[in-house]
Every structure is written in C-alpha cells, then in structure tokens.
Image 1: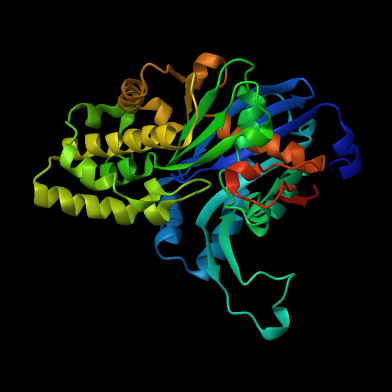
Image 2: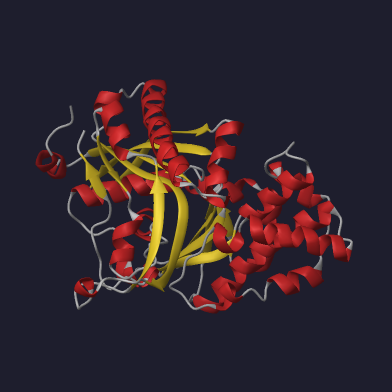
Length: 399
C-alpha cells in the first residue's frame, strides 16, 4: 500500500516510474527515475513491445473507433502498463516496493485540440461554461495500474490543459526545461515520434519563456508507407535502409510542404488525424500517378519530416545553438543526416551523447510531470500549449 498523498508530496526524493505509449503505438516505454531538488537520475528503462495482433487492435481504434472496443482496450492497456512497471522493477533489481509514484501518459486514441462548438442546454450556458472546446482521449486505465502495483498513479495529463483553453500538447516542455536548460546555449529539443515536436529553451531562460509545438510529421507517415509497401513484412524503416536506397522527389516535397498546418502559427498541436494513414494513402496514390518508386517515396517521406521540422524552427524560433534529437526518429540515421545537413551550421546531436537515453526521454518526462502533480505544482507551459494559465496536470489514483 502506498503512503498517504500528503507524505508523498513532502518526500525530498521521489522514485517515480514513467509510462508512455506514443502515436506510433509500438509498445509501452517504462522508465524509473529518482527526482530530487538537484535533478533527475534515470535508474532503469525498457520498452515492452505490443504483439502484432494487439497493435492491430489499437490501430483499429484510430481508424474505426467503437465505444465497446475502446472500453475494453482501456482495461487491457491498463494491465499492460502495470505489467511494464512490475517487469522493469524486477529486471532492474530496484523492487516494486521502492517506487513511490507512477506517471502514466496512456495511449492517445483521439486528439482534437481545435475548439469545436458544442450544443448545450440553456441552463448550462453562461460565464462558467464554455460552448467551444477542444478534446482529447487517452486510455490505459489508471485504476488497474494502481490496483496491480499498489502504487499511486497520476494519469490523464492532457485534459486539464485543454480545459484551461490550451491545446493539451505538447506537454513535455517543462521536463525539457528541467533536463536541458543551459546558461549559455539556446537549445531545441526535438522529439521525433509518430508526430515531431520541438521545445525551444532560450539560453539562461525561465520556464515561462519556453516555446514548444508539434511541427508536423515524424515517423508516422514513413511507418505506414513501409507497412503498405512491404505487405506488412516490415513495420518501420530499420536504420533508414529503405530511404537510403532512394532519392527525394522534389516535386512531391513541394506539394507536401504546402500543407496548411505547417504555416499555422504556434501554439499548435496535431496528430494522426492530419498526418496519419489518410495522408499516407494519398501519397501512395500520388506516387503511383507520378511513377515514383517505393524507395524514392520513403526517402521523400523522410525528407518531408526533416524539411517540415527545419522550416518550423526557422519560422517560429529564435537563435539556435544546438539541436538535441530523441524519440524513435533518432534511430534513423538517414533522417538524422537530413536534419544535420539542413540545420548546418547548428550542431545536431542525438540525446544519448548528453547522457540521457533518447528512447527513454518521453517516459522520463511523464515521471517528472507526475512528481509536479503530486506536489501540487503546475506542469504545463502556457507559452507552449496556449492555455490561459499554468495548471496542475493529471488525475490522481491512490495506490
């Protein structure tokens, strides 16, 4: 049984497990960290991959959501997230009983940050009730995680920011500020997951001066094309080998870079609704008409991610001294090489070179946010999400 929330909030050192499943829905990233006033120390990390049938079921929720299937998968993923914590604690020798808190992002099923008008009954209208709001949904039931582990869980981080008028994303800028703020260097932390996002941390700046937003496509379009073009034999472009065998089609890149999201001023966020399977299928059809080979198409998709990231940095950010890359895209040498070429003379480094596992950073970030929540401190950065004010994020499920 976990200690009381009051005692938990007063602990000088919190051992927190962070859990994350991103837009690519590969599996559960699990990290265990110690958080003190002096910083964050990563103790253990692993990624527990979903089985192929389970991943297909998750993708079915993206494309054809059914209430009963979402309900069931909410509990299935809760079990898997709990298992990820238990397995990592056992494998690392840290012991489940040593963990004070769990921060679980869950699995995003739908994210629609653009406000949409709602039809409300007359009695609900007024100054205390919005008639237009964004929405988001993450699953992976926190009650299951708390029940299986006996540990207090903070989950559902995005919803409070949206309630406060924000986009609900990106949510990692505060963690980026904690981990990578520098007295003399202005840094961009680039996470390339299914969607790519950047956090801009001015030299010697404060958290309130951080700028962050989703730039657009990351790995999601590349992954979908690889699955379709290999008949499911491959699920991603391992080591960038397929892209390396092709040439970028400049005509198609020119068309793609006209996407209206890329020109929208931050704060902004996006997801598979704009840069998912729908756009990837359009690319397949366009490639067929233009007679673009499969290798050239995948190379072009990689270049689209790189070009949209660099374009966003030049449009919306200030001077950059260093770009730090993490996420699955950091393991694609072709994509990293494209970024290096386009960002020159700004150095591009993979996060591992700074002593933090590039794959673990997102899970570590939600551990940091969970610690903020349990201590009653804000976790969002309004300059990044567009929220009206800083707010405490997440919902607490006692262990």
